[in-house]
Length: 374
Ligand code: HEC
Ligand code: HEC
Image 1 (tube, rainbow, N blue to C red):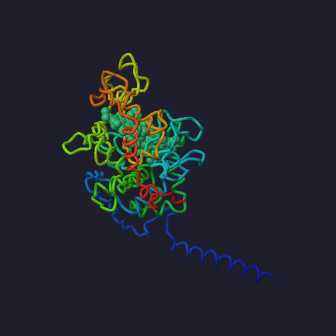
Image 2 (image 1 turned 90 degrees about the vertical axis):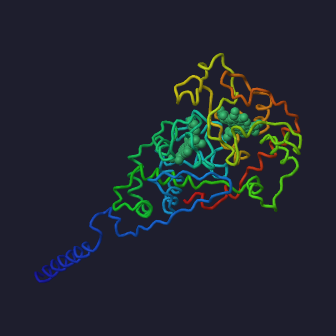
Image 3 (image 1 turned 30 degrees about the vertical axis):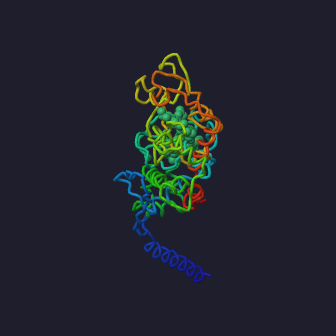
């Protein structure tokens, strides 16, 4: 019996020694990632004809690995306090990365103060993000929805713990950013990755683009051509089709269909500029002259992103055109290009809508690279 016991004890001792030996070969720290290869591949952005060069911050170059990580974070519902919503809940690829709502519901059912925005070609945005331009970079913007009191109602501390403990994130962060330990995963790196994903959201294969790029297999219909001429004020040029100028291009210029700047496009009339309930750009600059000005957003994929304007007040493109044709309300900072009612006929309005629909890019909205990886 005694021999048996000491044999058992020896075995136990021997096994635990063997375990210790094995431990020495395992990584010394639980979060050590240094054995995983770090060799990121640059992400080549397309350079569509006529598009400006995108400004990429020097401290956040685009890589395949960063893009993939950003995509996963963008669609991860664990960014929200109750695992119910992600960025993509309010920015859906099939809706041009908007959400089809006038106002979006956050995780506790409360509504956002303004309508969700399309993220199409967002990397070219130069004059500020949001309807009022209150944030400058995509990295800064991506920090906000997590702790937002209406949107994801979470803390970055929770999200950081989730990412560090996840099966895939530590390896993905290592491959994207070369960190040595999962404890280095933080909100700054996470938002860099999300920004990389967003910069890759380039729509450049609509019918309008193909015509711009001289793809002779694609042609405008007569109605689309007349709408194009109206949009860009080309109808009254020598040899033009004679259609009236609709002045759209001043603020929704080629080829991005946005200048990214802020204008009052005559949605509301108040006794004075100080009376605007949503002051828009004015609340950001603190200058009353900017009250009631909002970003002239992109019109790419506009067919998919109803309802329209910062408060989703118009349900259809026809209602939008009616607004610009005879609904514009006066304000002392109303843009000069909108001061004369257009008085378009019904068929002219239909032509403009036909042109706007040529900005739909299904190759973009269905691009597998941009879809939910979960
Ligand atoms: C609950 C809905 C909701 C969620 C979740 C949400 N957003 Fe948004 N997003 C909005 C709304 C609403 C706006 C416009 C807000 C404003 O202008 O005041 C917006 C605006 C933006 C803009 C500015 C676009 C532009 O043209 O200026 C970006 C970029 C953006 N969101 C990215 C994100 C990212 C990244 C996430 C996840 C980290 C996210 N959003 C989560 C609703 C949401
Ligand atoms: C003076 C500049 C200006 C001109 C000219 C202009 N727009 Fe706009 N557009 C804006 C601004 C600013 C907004 C956002 C306003 C808001 O939501 O408060 C906007 C919004 C829109 C929207 C809604 C976008 C969305 O995602 O909700 C559409 C559609 C649109 N414009 C189409 C047109 C068309 C078509 C024309 C020509 C008939 C035109 N615009 C002329 C400045 C302009």
